[in-house]
Length: 208
Image (cartoon, rainbow, N blue to C red; front, side, top):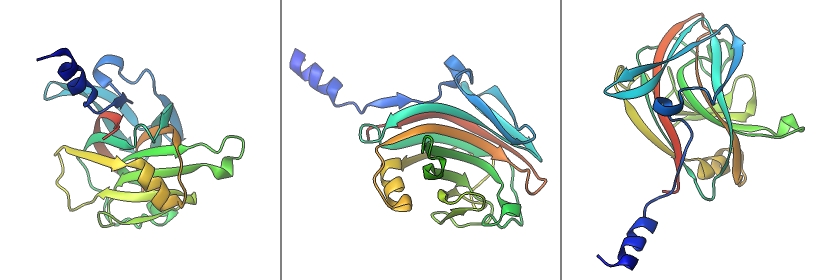
């Protein structure tokens, strides 16, 4: 193979921006954010991979990584997750039912103008159909909820997800946003006094 063919094949590989690498860095680059009691986040081995385990008992705390991502370069968010639990009988459009066995969300900071902050919550829903969306019960239209998985999906099974965040922001917030400023993981059961266990795999952005 000639040199320009090698260079061309290398250039054709999609670009990738790692957000989490649990096997190498653990959760040292993530900050804890507590809303009500502590969800316990620990690392464990599954199928020769290091994953993040989340156990929530009437708690709501998450892990946040502040990182500026250029969505024109890396529009696609990729992650793996698994839920071991169900939360039944919740109305997730209300504050009393605003609990999720698993969620991954991105934040566009409003800076000093905090009311301009926007978020997308990709959630494992308990009572909504996959593909549905609704405003967050506490933050309203500023934080849109998107049901990626639901109670119809099997428990104890890993699912791989991929979302075009650039297009989702444009669709659900009504305008183009080039950058996000943070990404977060949370398993929470404080509003329903529930109990949930879920797992998260590595997270990354990609160009394709």
